[in-house]
Image (tube, rainbow, N blue to C red; front, top):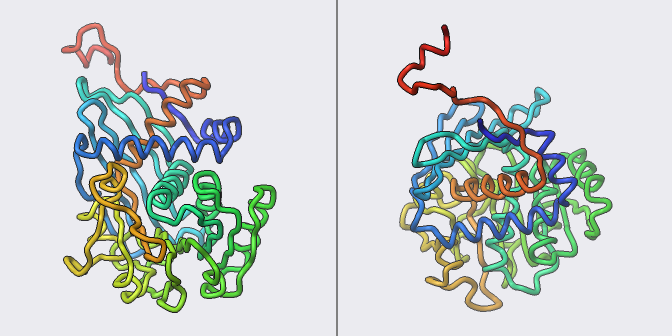
Length: 336
């Protein structure tokens, strides 16, 4: 039998445990697995691209557990009343190959992305940061805002989206969060006075959303929107003036802000900062940039966390995915 956390169970977990507490604890799980970085198998995710989006498989293994996530990214879906991103994930026992745990990962991917952003900022943003600009208020936005509040102590969010309805939705959802919400009139207006600048747009295109004029000394840029080939948000001169941090360089070179620029920028992988093998922020005036595309180890950690939390709170059901047979050589006997 395989333990399963479906969408209703995930919602109950979040409501019962608290979203901010969930995000803070998930951040620590991701940090713990990044500290074990050498123990994991690592490879860029397998992607199948179409004119409207991408379907990806993201596998990894630490020698004890094998994990993978199935995820899509289809910005055109919103025109048809469908989500841009959907996902599910699996943990399996390496010794036997048997699947142990399955979970919805549409909500969990949004939570994991936000927790990873907050983890990076905890290590490379200025610790006194209290104001965050948020450009793009789609499905990821609220999770980012709450993660930065829970993990870094962000107090004020200046937000902007080309879609006014998305801005209204964002303000409504966070009206009781305790955050000070300030609607901006443009991306540049949102960035004014911000300590941290988060970009979270969905359009699959190359843009220069973040320009040098928007960046001030000491700012941390959390660039999470550029996550597939042909999709970027940050101007090249901004990249050239920042310390760049990534999850896994071979994947980021394919999908991140630094895509198709092999060797042009010196990058530091986040696990190196977390383990202390390379420095994070070096001074208060340095501009730092987390070029995040999402990586399988983050999903592995998220699945571990949800497995532990859901088991403790009694929020799993069991699904009979593997036949139980008296004679393992007689599979056909199940049909008699």
